[in-house]
Image 1: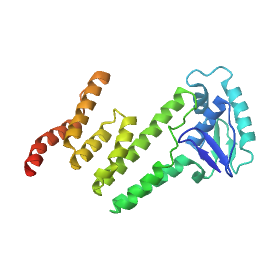
Image 2 (image 1 turned 30 degrees about the horizontal axis):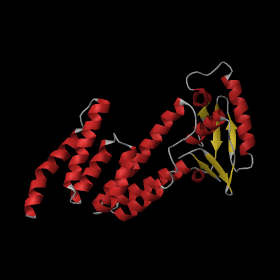
Image 3 (image 1 turned 180 degrees about the vertical axis):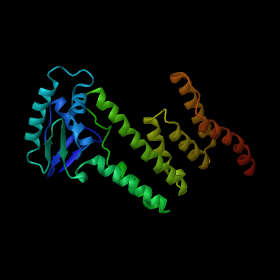
Image 4 (image 1 turned 90 degrees about the vertical axis):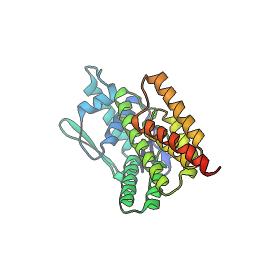
Length: 251
């Protein structure tokens, strides 16, 4: 049994997909999965289904969706409990991809604290492989889009930890293509930009590192009307100061 939300919503049992097709029903299931094994207030579920514009009949309609969910989930080893003003989806945590992602990230951090950096990067890669696409892809509603943005922030934090640790292991040259791909999907994430600039510079690609700074500065100015963060500016200055020394060392 697998509940997958790190990508499009999917339910799988013994390799077969269980269809949950109604958009609001999918949204309500996602809200239950995000807080699995805990009581989820009816108000939170109505927000998941209707954002801040629930109709007067929202609670009655919610009961109908919950009934249909129970029917769809009946072949699975899960329970959808009801209390006075809450619902709770009881499910084995390891059946949810988000739980597995977070567990592996926690393990990676434990490895890093103990100085086992290679084990940390391996666990982070396993965690990131849990993702199949953008979180909650195809699930409607602004409320859940906000939840998706929070999940995406967790994903980017895991990437940042991965690349930082790879650089500590001296793998800056090898991670550049992967870093470039992640940066291209997150063009305004300045910490990732700094990691890419550092990796380029440490790999002897100083000109590309400086060009990369010029690109992000232009994009931040044109699109957001702001300057690069202090970290990027200091890194840029450091590269400018060290580049002539590196050239003269090989002259």
